Length: 178
Image (cartoon, rainbow, N blue to C red; front, side, top):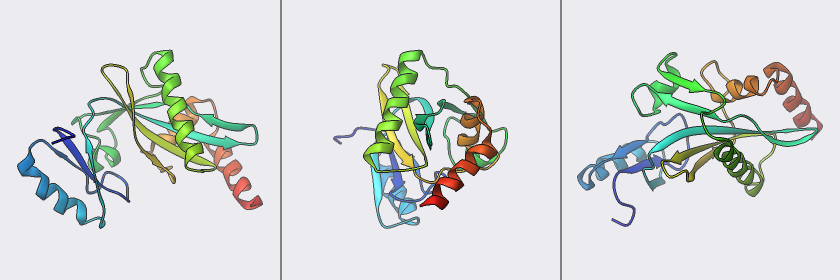
């Protein structure tokens, strides 16, 4: 009751939106929890925030820690679920995200803050929602973001004017030196 409806139920671990449900009624919550528990023993129940969904990669290089351009996610079906993530053409990506400069800077700040606060290194990707009032909501951070043809980080790397191969080589060299 305190969170209100709709809710998002998701596993505490995992990815690709597996086990994630949007719950629109109290009666639907038990089945969403059961579906979630198929992916792990801990469920997160959050208020469902409606707005612009963005992903902001954070990249560490020899010159420092940098937030890369935000990727705006526009799934055809409205929900960025497993199908929308891995079916080419089912989601439109806008890079950089269609946000004003202040909101874009705030998204970058939130992603960098999460990266630092969690003690992450090399590469991370923070998932955020910007609501209609311009509030940036932090959803989660991915510590091993995908690098496939449908992944978000390569889009952001290219939008930053960087070569994906060189970025991966740099990450590999940094890791090898540890």
